[in-house]
Image 1 (tube, rainbow, N blue to C red):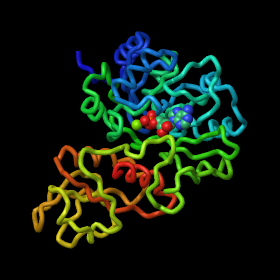
Image 2 (image 1 turned 30 degrees about the vertical axis):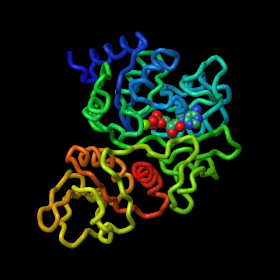
Image 3 (image 1 turned 45 degrees about the vertical axis):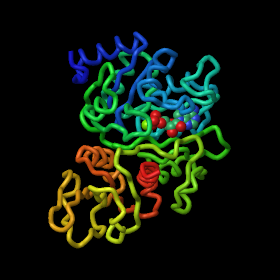
Image 4 (image 1 turned 120 degrees about the horizontal axis):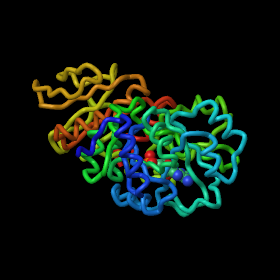
Length: 338
Ligand code: AMP
Ligand code: MG
């Protein structure tokens, strides 16, 4: 039997069986593919950590089908959580709240829990059919690129018991993580949902990551510095035209976006069409993504997967603008380059 199955009634039934037997299942969400486990099962949770080779200090996000189910996992549910849930759930926003006393660790030794309702029809059907909260990090080996297709999942996790194939993820970048246990809500991870949209509801948001203030690369506490990384070495550069290529491992590739300049002897490809090998001048692979940060984000991991598949040794990345709209993309690129 194939491990990658369509998310029809039979596929979901098989997935539920596996989840109820304390094993794990990969499923699509609107952000990236998740590796789901019954959040109440220590055995299933440890299987997630083992398959991903995820460090035990990195906690998991729990996915639920309703606000009621989210509240049951928490000890405190502030008014702002209600407002955020009403506006953005289902959607790519994860809230960190005080954890309910009856919930023993979903992987971390703290007293908080991260929850969200995913906006993906397959994920919601799986949550409803299983009746379980599902702890689900991205379905890839720790530190590597997150999967945005079922194919990415099996390549990164060949031992995964089952993958529900829901096609490519629409957002293609992880959820925004907002901590509501601090006096002022604190951004723990920039993501698919913009800060501007959040501030509309919460007012001021504290930023934990200095990279957000001045663009300088800094590790953000509680999150690993190196993450989202392809096999190739990633080098962020303010101008790909000026980068000194003589000391870069070959073959090198360029990852840039529409409207930003390319070295003159290179022709850009159509955005989102994949990889082009330019043979005039130095052979080089070029990926041109959208100049719109959300569209760029949606294609980023797929582009990094394509470049890895093309066997490039170095990826020269044109730094995106240092504006708030590019926060999540800059965060992922900085970690990929760490
Ligand atoms: P991933 O599931 O790999 O997309 O990553 C989950 C993210 O959520 C990580 O950055 C975690 O550090 C963060 N996270 C999950 N649970 C918590 C929590 N209880 N407190 C703070 N951050 C959390
Ligand atoms: Mg991940």
